Image (cartoon, rainbow, N blue to C red):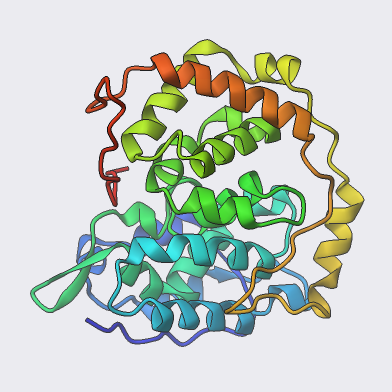
Length: 301
C-alpha cells in the first residue's frame, strides 16, 4: 500500500517530545493523517543557515528508499540506508542526541517512510505498532537508530562494517544499545564474527552479546584491546564538507569522516575472545552439531 509524501519544510527544525506526544494520538499511530497545523506551529527553528540542515537531499534519500525497496521486506532497506543517512546528516554525536530533530524528521520530513518501514495494513491504513518509531528512545526511533548504527559500527571513513551489522536485525534491536559498542574494537569484532559466519542468526547475536556483557564491562574491553583516540578535527572537516561533497549515491557507499582507523590488533584480539565466549554461550535453538537456524526478520523492541 502506498503512502503519500508529505509537504517538507526547506530546513530541519526541532519538535519537542511534548509536541510529538500530543500529535501521536492512537488514531494517528493507527494511520490517521498527521495534524499539519499543529506540527507547523510546534516546530522550533533552532538550527543555523548551514546547507547541512537543508532537507532536500535527506528527502530525496527517503524517496530513493521507498522506490528501491518497493515490494520487498522493509527490513532489507536498513543496510542500504544507514550509511547514506549518516553521510547526509553530518553532525557531531552531541548534536545527534537532540531528540527534537529526530522527531522533526519522522513527523515532518519522512512520516511516509516510518509508516512504510514499521507499518502494517489494517482496514486500508498503514498502522505503526509503536509511537516510539516516530518519537522514542534513540535506538528505537525509526531514523535515529540507523544514524547511530552507522556512527558506532563504521571504521573511520569505511561504511562497509555498517552494511554488515545493519543486515542483521538483532544487531539493531539488541546489540546497538549496549555500552560495549562505544568501544570501537568491540563493535568491529562483532562485525568480523558476522562476516566470518561464526555468528549467523538473530539468536546467535543475542547469545553472544549476553555472554560478552556477562564477561566484562567496557573498561575490561579497553584494557584488553586499547583503542586510539578519535580525530575530532577530521569530524569537523567532514561536517563542513557537506556543502561540497556528494552526500550519497544509490550505487556506491559514501565516505565517512577520516577520524582514525580502529586498531586491527585490538579488533582481532577481541574477535578471538568473543568467538571463544560464543562457543560456550547458551543459544536458544542451537544444536550441538552447530546447525544453522534461519535468521529471524524482526524482533519486538
